Image (tube, rainbow, N blue to C red; front, top):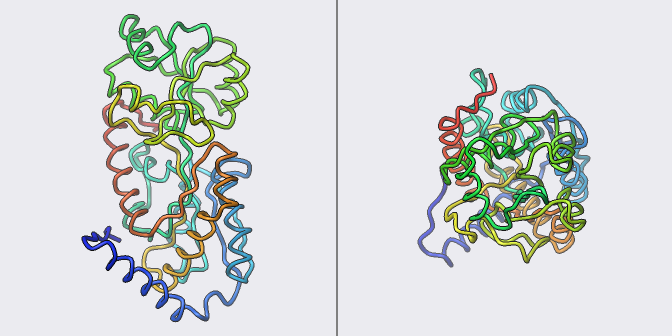
Length: 326
């Protein structure tokens, strides 16, 4: 679905309201039975947590059981492919994260196109990373870290949870934009990466806010900036990387809802209205803030534009960095 351009703000608002109202009228019979949300990762991660939150809330608002189905494997490709090939009737949805648009650039064999084979429903939330350094590193700001890395090329090590992960690509974007040579050290998961950072085995990491905060407060890690375009509600005193002098830098994990391409417009409109209402509620905004995230609940058009931008942006970063997984 191509993004829709709107030149008349009030007119577009009216059209959007009419479209949603029309969707409600046309989709009165939907759903008549259980709806399945496929999460293409194991239980316990961020994508799974978002899928379960939405599954619970959509069960309440749709009036039918919404079941979360973990179809893990191949960095999310198995579950995503299963949804792409599912009936286009609104009864099988996909909740996925930022890797959805980076996987095709990281792997040589991907059997689906994240833009062509899916209809966007809504961008649910953003989860920026925090750029942190070990307390022993003599860098208290982003410019100081850049200067240190340039003075000691290849000697400043950064950790990630895996090659091709959001923290890895956030660092590669940073390297490209600053023209520095930080050395990547991938670990088998977030836990081991954080442990290596806390021990001083590596000195830099782009990591999720929630696990970072306790270590920042204890003084074991020093936070330099957040990777989002705006400051993070959970850490309002912390500047963004862009504010710190690296204009245009932005990198966030995100979570969104998608459906197989060709799902009827009325069903997509209905699903979007429910997801947007859930994510824009005061309860969910507070819940996301507590988790170090930002609740969104976007229009379908905004999510479509986000997917297209992210796909192109990270394809270039991956190509420039040579960060292929296979």
